[in-house]
Amino acid sequence: MYSEKVMDHFQHPRNVGQLPDADGIGEMGNPVCGDIMKLYIKVRDDRIQDVKFQTFGCGAAIATSSMMTELVMGKTLDEAERVTRKNVAEALDGLPPNKMHCSNLAADALHKAIEDYRTKNAPPA
Image (cartoon, rainbow, N blue to C red; front, side, top):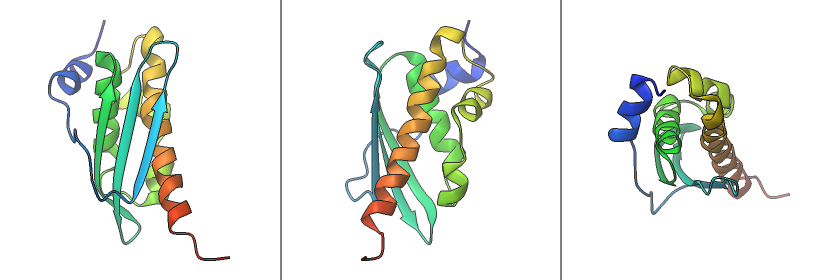
């Protein structure tokens, strides 16, 4: 049912934790399944220097969170913003149809964290 990559990222998630001095934070939840993800990014020179996540949810939610952090580490904000739900699922060699919403959480939390960073760092009007 799950690919080897999904199982690996579930059993050995990468970049778990918090960044107390995060430059941007994104939080997403899915009321239907109860999954919640919080993503923290540290930005230097317009690149994601560090990224951490905390996910409360199923194995697929944890795996997609972990994979997404690997996909965006070191990318510019514009590059990271182009990471889609489909990219996350494909990087894990697919997800069962009933778990595709988990890839939504990861990508959407990333986009919210980038938006949070840009809002905090917007030039004064």
